[in-house]
Image (cartoon, rainbow, N blue to C red):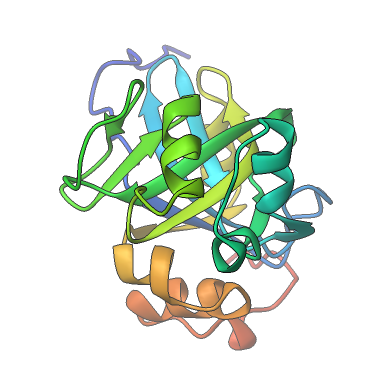
Length: 193
């Protein structure tokens, strides 16, 4: 059979949520909600946004030997995925200001992975709304598309309110509800008509 050119009808899922379907058995992503930061023919990169670690942000400040405001230090870090778990990523509201490595994902959301934003967060000069993850989720060329074809993920347009203002444990159901789906009604069995 002939193959379709990878550039033909490519639809980027940047600024979308991937909500793990009940049949997804990978322990790294069971019940995960991933915010897709980059997606192109070369692959995809995203951050899990609903898996808080039992580690406060103060540990990063202390690792960098930064003084910090005590109430800022209590915010939890999130496990962003299984790749480069020692590396930090900050998702934050777009447009407030730029840091060294800030990349705009949408009109509402930016991603920064440089140390300067951590220094500013420690002294309350960082973004007003943010989440910090350690690690990320990555897919090689065609890998995410294959997972989508096997119904591993529900795709939902990104929403900054879910990203920054919805409690971690409600992010999956809030994202699914955006497109009219109740996750509690989904079966773990793959159905074929």
